[in-house]
Image 1 (cartoon, one colour):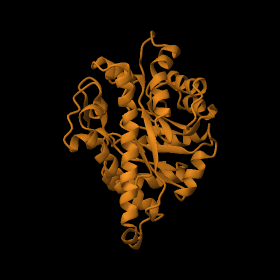
Image 2 (cartoon, rainbow, N blue to C red; image 1 turned 90 degrees about the vertical axis):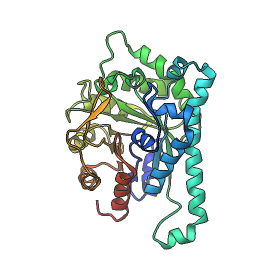
Image 3 (cartoon, rainbow, N blue to C red; image 1 turned 90 degrees about the horizontal axis):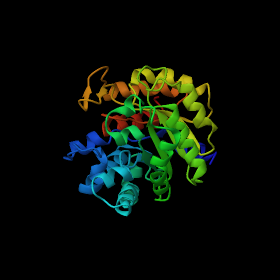
Image 4 (cartoon, rainbow, N blue to C red; image 1 turned 30 degrees about the vertical axis):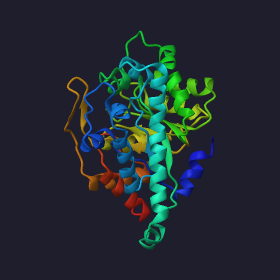
Length: 330
């Protein structure tokens, strides 16, 4: 797995584009996400909207699309009355929808290849499906993925037991890699690393942490310690930051570089802050798409090679990043 990401980045020309915010795009298309399952509720009620958002990001130039499984847990579906088998099928379905979207997009590009290539495009660009895995705090739906405080009763074994079956299902569903996202503490990173070893997972993974101070992960654990766990895992092919205000990303890249030579990925949020109690996004250093692209230039210079967006970013954000990278303006 060691050369997986390096080979992919080479195919992409040295840098790759990850997709952007998912839930807010589903809402823009009419989805009601007022549910503990959040975006994963669309796996039940409106899978066509998930496919549409994937296609929006592919049209915008994304090389990597993340599945709608961030909050799709077997335990969460069972709490809604689904059987274990039905719950596993819904988790698996998240990957199938992303695969369908990729096929639709590539077929469309192939059909229109002469016009597309004539306009300077490349219908053959590499596209990966990343199976998204949210933290234990995402399942709790109490905002604890933004502070990493699970309490003393949650142990390493608790976390491994919670994630184990979902990791198995997603790893065998046809995705190209696993995306462990918004990791809020060192304990959960260790749980993921041990699970990948224990289960003999055959596809690569990335670890993305979140920070609210630009120094540590949100729990207060050292980012360097967390990134070192990712660096030590033979399964992890990239490590980085997501769901973090853009103003912190540059310094966090530099911190990660001190402990790993693996490719660094960054896909921050819009700069707003999520309030877990009110379940609202609060304005802080909110940005516009043009500003986001100017940040990407600095992040690339600092050493990152995969760029995208998280909460509240849009296909326009991703389109700006893809255009800038294709023109070598960042």
